[in-house]
Length: 291
Image (tube, rainbow, N blue to C red):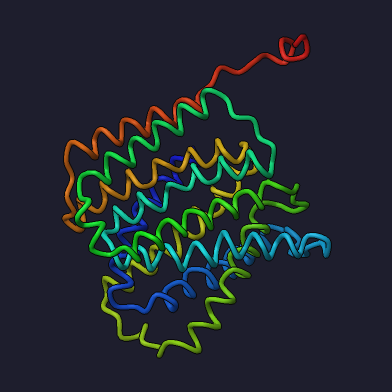
């Protein structure tokens, strides 16, 4: 259910990003959706009775995870969505499971099973099918393509850092601090590089910004960090490949972006990939002990 929520809200967020950054500078957009979201999430955690203290020994890992999960992902994905179609940017950014699996095998010593390999193959097939529909459109902005792929790698690296340690705090506290810390470099650049023009944006742009802040960032980030705490990094990552499918469908419905048989085939491939790794027969505890 958490993965379903992540897919729906992060998928529709690609449309919100496209609408917002057409009028709001990208750095200001990302400051709002990170700094404020982090503050709100930490406030919710405090009201819920959780301590906001972070042990000193994990601050270094914390900063590294925030840099990859929030700063790198937020900036690179926003620029990618600005330069190419929102659905296409989502597809490229969500090649993340491929990079996560490779990094998890190298750094976390996660085991590659036939299910994971088959799911990766199905995911890659879905992405290739979607890319094949408009190679010319991708070629119009090679920098946009590169930024979207770098966003995927940044998020993958952050997921592996996230999984490399047992965090001694509730998920909501960890997520709040990561979002807030990751937003600080974005805030510094926004103040130095861009005039403040967010107040001049139209109602659709501001509403899209509000949606991104309140739903995909607050609920989506919490749900994602919770999923990472429950699953191996590679399996959690594969669960996200539903997001670009939602991005494609919402882009077609709201922005009029093209949708055809390729998107349907890719969607079915992604559903099969998720089913392979998420819906597995549980081994009874007694049988596991016998093994």
